[in-house]
Length: 202
Image (cartoon, rainbow, N blue to C red; front, top):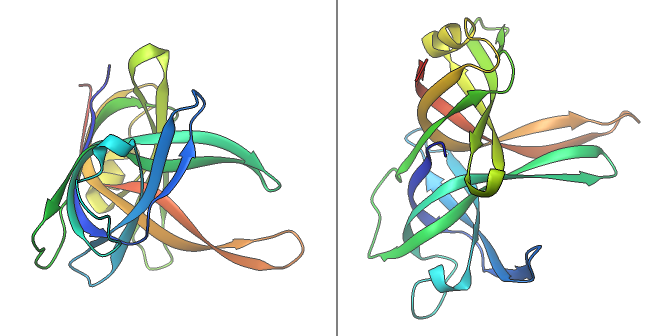
């Protein structure tokens, strides 16, 4: 089994919703807001079992510390096939308060599904898009979208599909405009790991 871990600290942004998974067990969902140094905020989708919730009243504005891993799920809708990316919470603790930037650390080892896509922005900034597969128990896998910048992007551009890699980064949310076939535009949110360090051949 590959390494897939994340440590997050932030503010619960919405009330919990409850549903059922494929096995008929109760599953809870919410969203965590994590401030960045740039004054922007990442909104992280959370999924967890009821027993993980801290004791006492659940408040949408409470500060929490979370240990978990990134999970992904394929689904279909009228626009085609998509990948849902979320954090599966294994442990959640209340925090008295949080100062400044929240904690947002992700560590993953896995394999590249295909060769990274390297490009430059109109302003000359280097970017590499990657899809990393991390194996877990019971022959299941998570396909995790990652994006590298600058020197890390150039390094990733030399890697090939199937190559084992270890990355460190943060879970980020990013708004983008989806252009639809009938000339309409729609704002959507992408969830991915923003790579800080990468090492191949692990």
